[in-house]
Image (cartoon, rainbow, N blue to C red; front, side):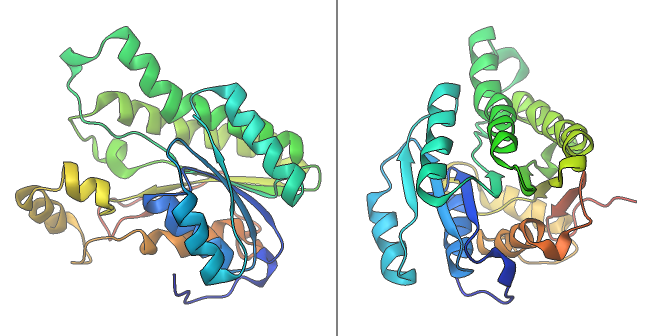
Length: 254
């Protein structure tokens, strides 16, 4: 991506991104590489073509580890693999999520556990592993969502997980702050990735959501990158325990 800002302290940093090969995650991988960071990411689908594209663009390939973040042993192994190659993780971005639509009555115990495994459990254990590696401070950015702040219907397991992510972020910021580790959440609005466009972005829903935004332009993955770079950089060195909305002005706080 073309960056509007330079965060010089990110050069050489070891970054780990969950789901860093597609959607918002791919834009994040691109963005961190553009700052000179060393990036590793985990994803379930093969990302060989994307890795080659990034290598050609930046002269440095991200390290891709294929695996399932819902399997904690695979997640830990991927993070440790990246640490062996790039050095201990300095910056963790918990980005991967599953916002599959569902109703209250459709949710079985098995479905609930599967949704929590991806949308909450993986976040917690990635934070745990990153904190163990961050012996000299670091930054953790957990993706939440404005969906729970809005009180959206249509995916209650997902909104429950995102509310929990914000609470976890605040608790870990308090616990890890004395070690120089900052923990913040970023709550995107409706970012029109290809997945969203293919599955859920009807013309009616898009128009209704845009009406709720102060800024009358739909969000793209690139709109999320520099806010994450800001939270990862020492530019935000005294910011922790916060949930920052990047949504075109749908929700407000304060």
